[in-house]
Image (cartoon, rainbow, N blue to C red; front, side, top):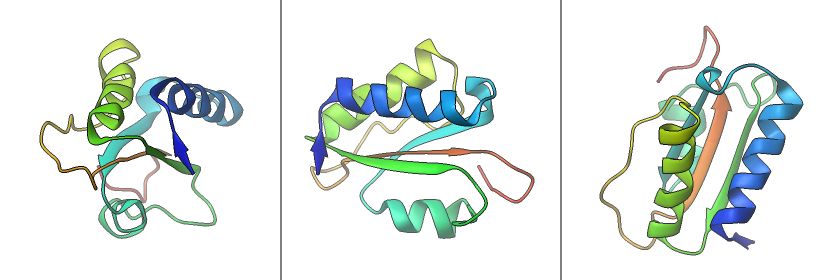
Length: 101
């Protein structure tokens, strides 16, 4: 399912509220392959760590959603400046001792 910027923001905000903590406790990224980004690159534990991803309409929409969390809410993450139209997934996970930035 593809989500608008507003829907992605709402879903991630609700998710963070559910699991608690400050926005800085969460990493928000943009990728074309969220499974690889979450579970291989960041070493998120699929069963123990809170995580979520949503597909945006476009790369620019994904970037806009990510920017909201990084710039306005001060979540952790590396701003993605370049990507093709396949780079359209916004992901979030709650950082832990076992995850990698």
